[in-house]
Length: 637
Image (cartoon, rainbow, N blue to C red):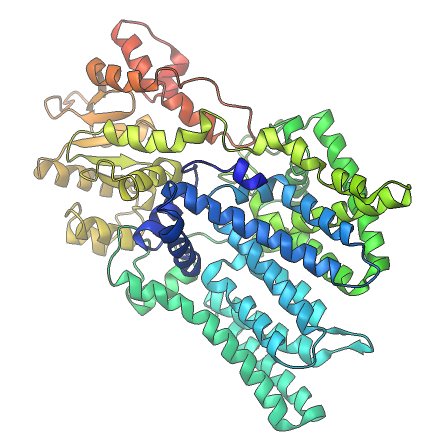
C-alpha cells in the first residue's frame, strides 16, 4: 500500500525508460541484457498494462517484488526460532522496506527490486534447505542462485549468506552441503562474467563436494547430488538463450544485438563497458568506504534533509537507527544464531564486500572542497548497489526497535511503530507522485521529439537524453518518424551496424572500423541524413562544442538545434538563429508546469526541468534579452 501510494505514475529518468521500452518490445536492454527481468516485466505488463498506464504497471511490478521480499524476510525471521517475537519480524521487515534506496527502487521500473526479491527467495530456500536432509530445497537454492545471471548479478551478493545457512546444523557444520552451494555460486559467477576458469572452478568444487558426500553416503549419492546441483544451475542459466533468440527478430530495443555467439558472450560479460578490476583501486579505500557511509546517511531520514549535504536531523536519525541496528543484531544473536549469522554475512557482503568488488570511483557529490578538482567521479550516485547491506541493517534496526520496546515495558505495537518511523521520515523525499517531477521524464521525451522536424535524425547524448525518447516512441507511439541517434554509443560496433541497418545512416566502412573519436562517425551520420533529405537535429543536452563540430549554422527552438543547410558557416564561426515560432509553441506546453523541483539527492529532475524552460528563453533572446547562465545551460554557446 505504501509503495502504491508513492508509485511513479509514469516513466522516470535513468534506466527506467529503457527497461519499459524493452518490456513493451520484448527487446534487449543494455548489457548484460537482463533477459529474465524483461520476460517477467513483459508478462506482468501484458496483464496489468490493460487496466492502467503501461509504465505504471511496470512500476507496480517493482512494488510487488519489494513487498514480497519484505514478506519473505519477516517469514524467515519469525520461523527461525521460538524465541523470536513475531512482532520483531514484522518490525524488521517494515524498517528494511522503508530504507530510502529500497523504497525508491520499489516505485520505478528498475531491476534492483526484482533482484532483491530473488536474493530473499534464495535465503528463504536456503533456510528450508538447512532444516531438511533431502536435496530438493538445496537444489532449489542452487537454481535461484544461478537465476541471478539472467536476472541481475547483484542478487549473487546474498549467496554467501545462503551458504552460511545451509552449512549450519544443530550438531555442527555440514561441509558437504555448504560446498555444493558454494560450487553453484562460483559456477554462476563464472557464467555471469563469461569466465571459463571460474566456471571450471565451480564445477570442480561441485565434484569435490560430491566426492566428500560420497565418502559418507556412497559414491552414487555423492555423484547424484553434484549432478543435481549442476543441472539446476544449467536450467536457470538457460534463460540467457532468450537474448540470442530474440535478437534474431531485431526488436526496436536491441542493445548489443546478441544474434551470434560472440555477441551474446559480449553482452552477458558487459564487455561494452570499462568494468573496473579489483586492482588497482580507482579511489583510496577510505574514500570508497566514505561513499558507503554517505549513502547510509540517506536511508532512514531523507525527508529531514533531501540533499547530498548532511543535516543535523537526518544524521541524528541515522545514528539512532544505527544504534537500534546494533541492539537488534545483539538481540537477534541471542534469539536465533542460525539466521543471525546469515544476516551478519549479508551485511558484510552488501557493504564492504560490494565496495571491494565494484572498486568505484568517488561518488559525484563526495569530497567537495576536499578532493582535487581533477578527481574522477562516478556518473551518478551508486547507493543502489549497496541495497542488500542497507536491507540487512534495516532488518536489525526494526528487530531492535521491537525488542527494546518490550524490554522497556511497552507494548510490541510501540516497537513496530518505532521500526516503521522511516516511513514518515522518508516519505516526503522518496514519493514519486510529486509534481512536476512525476511527469518530467515523459515530458522531456515527448517534447524533444516534438521539437524535431518531421523525418528528422535527432542526435542525443547520454542515458537521460535517450531512454525517455525510446519510451515515448515505443510505448506512447510518439513521433516514430524521428530516428534517434545516441552519440555515446557510437564506439560500439553493434550500434554502428544498427545505424547502417536501420535507415542507412552510416556507410559500411564505418561499421567495420571505428574511426576513433565519435565525432567522425557523427559527421558521417550528418552527411547521410542530408543526402537523404532528412533534417538533422541535435538535442539541447548535447554540449555546444560537440554540436559545433557537426555543423556551423543552426536554428534552435530551445530543445533542439536544427542544422540550417542555407548557412554552412564558411567563415568557420558557428551561428545560432532562434526559431521563436516553434519556441512559443513549446513554451506554451510548459506554461504552469515549470515550477521548481524538490531538493533531491539526484540532480536529474532539476536539470531537465531547467532545460524544458529553454524554449521560453529563446523567446527572450528573440526580444534581445540575454543571460550568461541561461546561454550556458541551454548550450547556445
